[in-house]
Image 1 (cartoon, chains in turn blue, orange):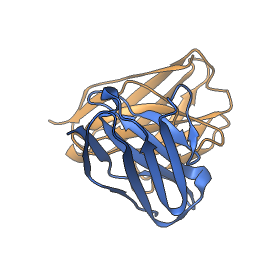
Image 2 (image 1 turned 120 degrees about the horizontal axis):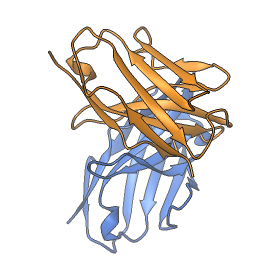
Image 3 (image 1 turned 180 degrees about the vertical axis):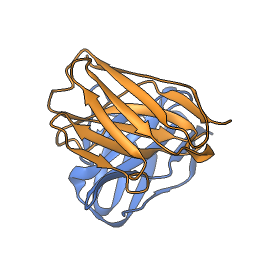
Length: 110
Length: 119
């Protein structure tokens, strides 16, 4: 089973700043199988990025994903007040078929 | 647009069976999507439970496989989750989600339903 480790655990930034969130896999992951989600308190997760770099429908272009192999990054170019939330990465593994999530990064207002 | 709505008992007794349904509106469960369940214990992260395709293929989390059944009812356009032999560790918010083919991700989520396992 592939384990995803997200860093940092908490990221404290101010609106307008750039956020860089990391997701490291315990073994190589196909870029097609890596996704990012945002979750706010009391809400369901929202898909931001799939296939490592494809923005989901309706996601602003300040969100971007990159990476390959074992290292993936979610970048928020200029933080808006509504971006402060919890972020999870997720991967799909085919043997056996299953999805796993990272433990999350909390993005908080500095 | 597709919307998902979970429903079911909010309280289940230990050793009992948790049963939830997810009603799909604005689209057909026979479309080119997988349909799955994810749970989130209080204050913790996300755990994938399993998913299925309308043709009948299912995949389950190996850690839950012996206790989980996911099925669909095409006539009602809904999917179901059954988790047997529950313990307090199964207390969580349970979400249903849509997984479009070749996305390998969950693009539409229900609002979630809280299930507490307690006597």
